[in-house]
Length: 216
Image 1 (tube, one colour):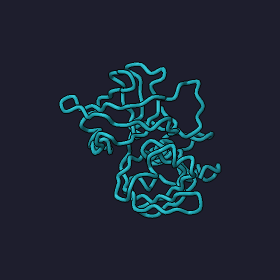
Image 2 (spheres, helix red, strand yellow):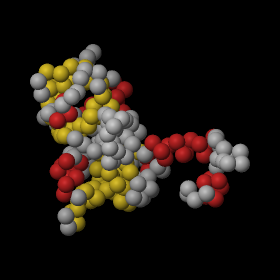
Image 3 (cartoon, helix red, strand yellow):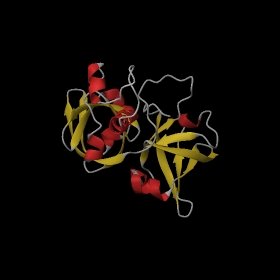
């Protein structure tokens, strides 16, 4: 489990060719206390560290992961958001991020408003249906607040500190980002679809029950 608070921006140094299909990444902070077998989120994708040499660590990446995320399009020299898995004793300052990409979006536009940078991203209905203004989404692994939602796009607003800590503000229009929606929204949807669970009186968990008790 991750928090979506990016610890460091690493540099992709080498792509390992098939059948290895791995990435060799230069970093510093995320290697502190890291051992082979530990998990690091790379652009929001949970990957296992398979080798450490100095300031480089290597992760294996399956073909399916390359297809479902933007890691397949990263070239040597690319900047990548990195975060170590959260320890059980750590603080959850972001939101619950699994490191499982739900889909990809495309940056449509960027505009400055005062000290804030607005980024508008196109996304399919399989992503947008989970989005709520002022709720969370992970973009390339970074926990960000959804500011606006429309039918096939949404927008986030980045303060200067966030702009400096993640790669999103530097990416051009047309760049494809990894998206992970709030896992709690997915669980609620599944429960509503199945009518699973029960209320205090043994009734089914449905939209009426949630409305009556102030959950929606």
